[in-house]
Amino acid sequence: MTGRAVGRIVGITLLAVTGAACAKGMLVGTVSGPGPATSVLNMTWESGLFGESGTLAATMPDGEQFKGTYQVVREGMARGNVPAAWTGEEPIQRQGEIDGTYWAAGADHLAFVRDFKDNAIGTLRGDRGSTMLCRFRLLDSAGGMGGGGTGTCQTSRGAKIAARF
Image 1 (cartoon, one colour):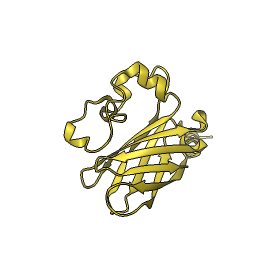
Image 2 (cartoon, rainbow, N blue to C red):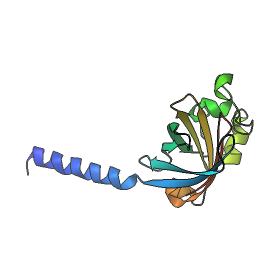
Image 3 (spheres, rainbow, N blue to C red):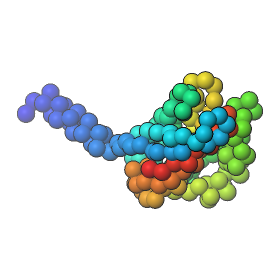
């Protein structure tokens, strides 16, 4: 077998392992808050290689599109790995109408890790300047978002979302 053939086999194997390790799914949420009556929100998620973090995307009923990331909070997680939105270090104008249990939840880092351990937090940015913060209670922390769960989100414009996945 030539070096080129071995390289191809290794490359194909790595792609297969990477593809198998990533998962994706959908959250179905109910939006309430300012504006129209309660409506449905579909949010998608895609995990990274080991399921401990990944991406989120959602479109609000008014058409604003949100994109961002989530991560599972683990024991020993460094403060620098917690997004600024959760530590209270983000500019006040981004906070809007999100309640204080989200913003600056990580100000006391040890309590934050203890309270959110084995659950996920998400930070999304809207294409109209809004912020969305989400908390997800995972049914199976080892399975990440793929293990299912429930969650709540709030936008800086006052919308509240209850979700299940």
